[in-house]
Length: 321
Length: 316
Image (cartoon, rainbow over all chains, first blue to last red; front, side):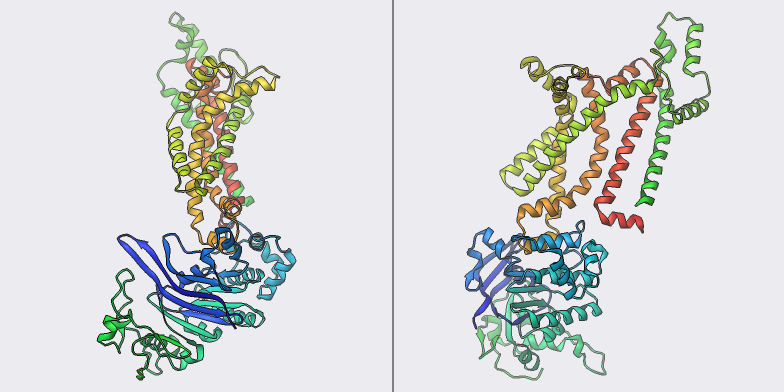
């Protein structure tokens, strides 16, 4: 089956005083109908920029330096602003990270969701909106519609955000850190909700997160990002059982869920993320990589691998972590 | 909400009492004995004494203040020293003129200011935005009476399009409207600039908010986002500024009324100050202060209605 949404060799940079910050470098990804793709990485690795680019809403100061974002084969960047707006919401819908600020504070939930659903024509009837709220687990949906955002808990607001996105019947649903701003209990509930929903949803889902647990629970395939690049892409099971990129290995080793038993010790990755405005000549991870050699420091790696892609000179080198 | 309303009105009444007491004290600090000023240099001491007695100036100041408030509570703002007419009657006679001027000036300033502010946001960083910026700052800097005088020279004297003085013929709305144009323009023009700047700044801040990004992500039209979602948030600070601004609108109305010899609170109070007609000065100041406080209080209550968060903070 062909890709529904694909990103090809996308490079994005931000203007900063005295130069440019290369947020995304040559990113290639795709997601098919019925598939859930996870994008995982540390803060500042470019995953949120990638999510914003997928819906055509890059922040001010960001420039696309090359590449394409295709929805069913058509490059969104070459569409008129009005056609791009027509895609947003209707074909590609998004759930944002912080449900505290994602809603307008002075309008009721009902008014906002009705405005969103009416963005491309007729507004949906309140009954249909209420039915969707009920489906995402909101008790007394009719009452919820009359309330203001600050009167709902973070978890409830995130449910409303998901319901609003689903009401658009999008082909692609992008969730940018959907659980990050929530506490652990709420996070578990939202993951549970998304799992239940994906069974009925016939489009593609992209979940951006820094939380490996979310990936393991929800996704079919995962792309690991580091310093603006996709360093490894694999089926979720393959990545968790057999990570090939040294960074993926390190990331899995640092997951608080697998803290070394008995010791209470939580491993960390030594060193720091490179400065995205002055990138090293070779592999961006070389300075922190236990396997790095002279080649890694001088020449950028190319994607290698069969059935899964790994951006590493030493991908074939099997070393126990 | 009711609880808040009661507390807010109570606070306004307290402010009113403080203002009036201060005002009463200030009148006595101003040099010049009202009796001798009124009666001229050749008045006999007996005559002056009689007038002072009539004005209540022979009593101790605290007694005077107490009497003043007691009378006010009975709806009696005192009697004009010269014409012997009740002060309240005179105020109510001219107040509609001033109120009309203030409301019309604020009204056109509000509509124009908000539209220009939104225009500056929609075309931000283009020549439209820059031109509006320069124009706004220019009109803010020019005092209203200067605009009034130039408006009078150009449109009334040179072009003879509009009347130069007065408030128009009573009972003739067309003539009253024509007489209102220049004063309302002079009073409102500075506020057009001010409101345009205010709405622009407030709106630009709101347009950066995550909830606007949400609306964009759902594919809402930019025009709908500005008018239906952003303006509603951006308007809240504007309303509180506007209520305070109504006070300054009324004080520029005082100057502009003098320029156009337009009957109103402004002409009433300037006339009374010149003649040391204390009951009229006190009565007018009290009336205007009370009116102004009522407007500010109403605005605060309106904000509480518009912004549900304020409402809840107050409830909690």
